[in-house]
Length: 278
Image (cartoon, rainbow, N blue to C red):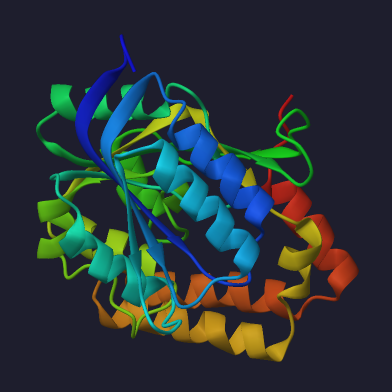
């Protein structure tokens, strides 16, 4: 398109059969409507898709030559898919994008320019506007800290970046081992390993992505099974040497207790954790 600025950027996306074709369409539209466009959009099909999803993929592949579609024979999970995608990306700077979220128009421009201007930064992200029905109605904002020191401190208790917003340097991610599938959540453990290797992160103090979520889904993730999973996550973080034993105990007490709260109380906790737009 005349006047469009293309940048040396790979967008890394994954889609699988249980996702909604309408959401994929909205996500891809936002990727191809950026003020600065990526030279490569790598869409990984994590196993066979539905006819509706395939139709959306085929439509966009016919419209945009920069869209590369790679299909895998079976569904292996996001971590495996992203690791393969890292190796397939043509450019050193990679933007992650989820197939049900929506980019704001200047996301790539702002994040890419920041990495160009700050050679010591390996990853940049932002806040997200959370919505359940329409991007016109934002339910809450998921805020994360701005500078490298605050991010490092925050990471010892919670995930310090919003994964669907990140743009990072491929070599730094690969050097940290990529998305190790034996650890869950894979993205949080990747950030931890990068931070332990000395990577510096930055988060824009504004939302650059609309994040689709359901509070009911979040609230349902409670009970003893999820509580035990939280214990395992914190144990693994401690074993990596990223947190002290007192910090491990405190994290477990907070997260374990939250998971076993009655659903009604857990809903109140999550609402308090998510600051409203206003």
